[in-house]
Image (cartoon, rainbow, N blue to C red; front, side, top):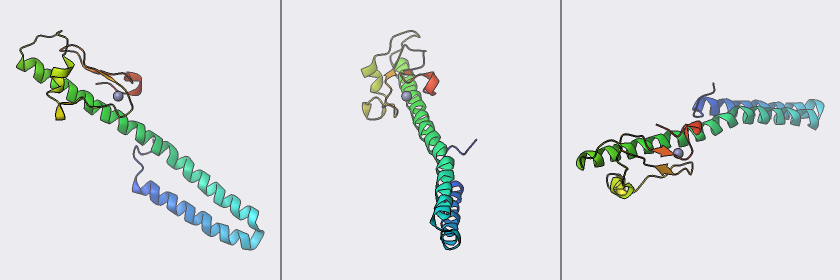
Amino acid sequence: MLAAAPSPIVLLFLVALLAVGASKCVRERKLRGKLLGCSVCVLACLIGFAIMWPGYYHAGSTARKNACIANLRQIDDAKEQWALKNKLTIGTAADTIAVNGYLKNSQAPACPAGGTYTYGAIGVHPTCSMGPSAGHTL
Ligand SMILES: [Zn+2]
């Protein structure tokens, strides 16, 4: 699998690929005319995009998923603290506003992919509306 985050090596490879394409472009123009040279440039660019695009796309969705999981952990921890402080038992429905009091700035975090959080009962993991299929789950 391609690296989750586009590494400097991948970026270096793309730059080298474009440089090779550009230098070939100049040479080919002199020898065989514009059409062949430009086709090499276009091909180099297409290969570059083909290599980079899945990496960028995958890195973006993975980053959003991981940020959402971190938010769910914070909500879960806040629920636990709220339950301990108030001596609540498993199955008690979470009071969202009270639980938010144990979160940073007393505010519920937002899912970076636009999902909404359901706090659920004590003893149950909070969930994101983006769902487990998107990996937004504890
Ligand atoms: Zn989410």
